[in-house]
Length: 323
Image (cartoon, helix red, strand yellow):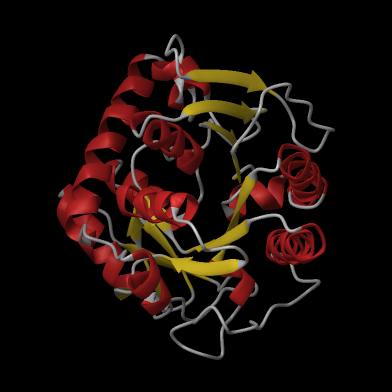
């Protein structure tokens, strides 16, 4: 079977390429390297079950091959990225979604859309079930990402209802692990890089806001099950780790695990920063028979080792930057 993965050179997309190839699929990867890196998929070049196309999905997509599954994972995903590229973020989850859904219709392919916990905004229900409609500021600074994902969900479901496309939506909560960029901007890579350099860890607000953190291997398994199981047309699943930590607790863990001399530096709160974020994964447990297996302690140790290697490599080869 052939799988098309957009955002293939990104953090999650590159791991998805590995997983589907390992499971015997032929993978066609698309990416324009706006936030992804060739390094993430370099090990796949030359693999007979992988083909890469450098392409921007906001343009019309032509693929001559038969395609069985499309996973639309292209999109800047960290606040640093989508605030730097606000219009492209909205285009990739409007035009990009339209083009990939159109391709799914033409190829009669199953379609998996990478949504986000950000569709819940600053939630008034905790933890957040899939049935919750969210509390989102439609014109706030984060709306370029939040509303783009909400629009893409609506368009995906419209194609499901109007054209019978087998659509599945994964609402992905905070995920971390190897292949995140040094300058990614999300809290775990930020904290690890600052701690390894003995710089103060920036905490916005008082640090009492909570997040849940899912290790990349666990997330990939959840996405794979959501993708390959039959009978899930039109279904939406939260995928994330329901263990909840305050940002201060996370900072303390990372300082301890890195043996850093860093301390916490409190900064003004970020606009529309959710106070709580934690998935209700009872649906994924029941239907996908999935839940995270890797603890935050184990996942952080793996991730810290990865960032140590990246930082050392950059010191030896400063031209490599933060890719």
